[in-house]
Amino acid sequence: MNGLEVSVHREKDRTVLRVAGELDFSNINQLQQEIERQDTKIVEIDCSALQFMDSSGLVCFFL
Image 1 (tube, rainbow, N blue to C red):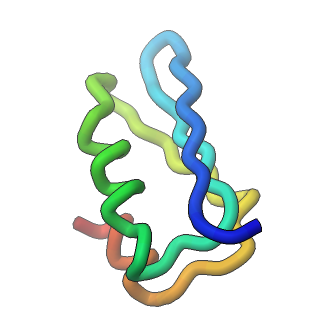
Image 2: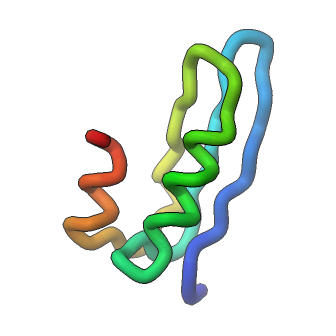
């Protein structure tokens, strides 16, 4: 799989973003925009299907 795939699963009081594929400098904006779009208080990011993440992908979780 090339690129990034983000699926959104809404639950009662939170949103789970399932991230699959590769997260790097070329597609970090896609994940950042999806995080910002969520209107629940809790946004959980499931990275269990990530195959690759570079340092710019890691930064996304701290901004």
